[in-house]
Amino acid sequence: MKRDDIIKLSNGQEATIIRGDESELKNSYIVKLEDGELRVIDRETLTLAKGVSDIRGRHINRRQ
Image (cartoon, rainbow, N blue to C red; front, side):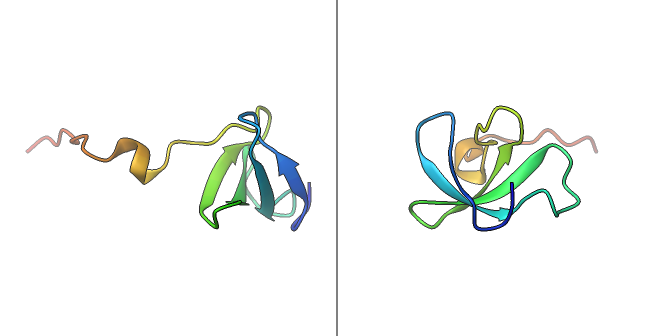
């Protein structure tokens, strides 16, 4: 897929490719969703990767 291609994600939402096959990403695309949000999707399954809003409130355990 190339930049500006419009695709349908696994959840039925449409998205525009921002970084496609021409990028150095091997397993993902960067897309712009219908609401303007930029997200990363899996190249094979066309599913959204978890975003910051999906993990908000979770704490990272850090060793000291």
